[in-house]
Image (cartoon, rainbow, N blue to C red):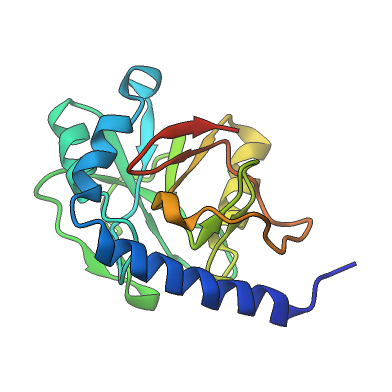
Amino acid sequence: MPLPSYEKSRARLQAKTARAKAALQNPAASLELIQHYPAAQFRGKIIGAYYPIKDEFDITPLMSALIDQGETLALPAIVRKHHPLEFRRFASGIPLERGPHGTHQPPKSSPVLTPDIILMPLLAFTHDGERLGYGGGYYDRTLSEIRAAHDVFACGVAFAAQEAQSLPTEAHDMRLDGILTEKEFRRF
């Protein structure tokens, strides 16, 4: 039975508050994140990342380190509402364009890649891999599409303080395979 939308809305409001507080209290978190990234496990893979907006966990230092190590990165692009994201190649010097919802995405001229790992922002996560996103369903549709044809490791990126005891989820909500925080990397 579908959950009433107000349960997810209430959870999103609480999670946004927790994330904003964690972002203010952890100014060095972006650098600490690099220490916990499982580089050896993901070496040589196509890494789907994201360019942070608002108080999302800032992974730009990690992205720079990965590019410096010769890793292949791709950033999501919103092509159409209610459709999966398209991951486009990203490297130093590639200018980003403004996308919907205040996002930044590589230009249409960047090659489209299928990530092996997707580092994704979120509002909250649980100890067993449930995630709460923003409600647009972009990552759920994207993971569903990629998982139907290709193995992909879905890794949430969050402050440790964003972990929740439980979250309102529905059948279409895609689970995480792991979480990366300023304190640890954990598989589910």
